Image (spheres, rainbow, N blue to C red):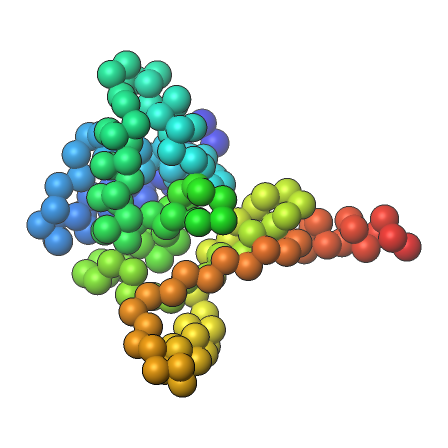
Amino acid sequence: MHGSGHHLTSLEKVEALCQTRGVHLTPLRRDVLRLVLEAGAPIGAYALLDQLKASRAKAAPPTVYRALDFLLEQGLIHRLERLNAFMGCAEALKGHGNDHPHDHPHQFLICRGCGVTREISDHDVANAITAAAAKAGFSAARATVEVEGLCGKCGDALHSAQT
């Protein structure tokens, strides 16, 4: 499969990271993470379940949700509320040996045209949210920003169609 070498490397990095943290990446959790990575785009829990059933006939929704919860807790994947779907965390998969799950800001750019979703990590955006919350007397612990719009390709196509 195209790009599977990249996923293997990412999974090996994740396994090393989990060992460092003293948590166990069970075969099931590893399978769910592999499917999320191989999707290449945000994927829903039921689509994951369907794919998992190919190798694990007894897989059920609670099984998948428990694995997803673990991967979310460890900062290895993100949940996109708008899409009700999951995707791999770009920072965690770079394998920086980060011991603090989700200690980087994350924002998502979701294209309405083709559905491509990109994770960015802009500290200025995170600082602006924290400052705005503080002005309102609120102590922000974590914020996920999901921005809908058009990617460069879809934006160019729309512009070409209008001219």
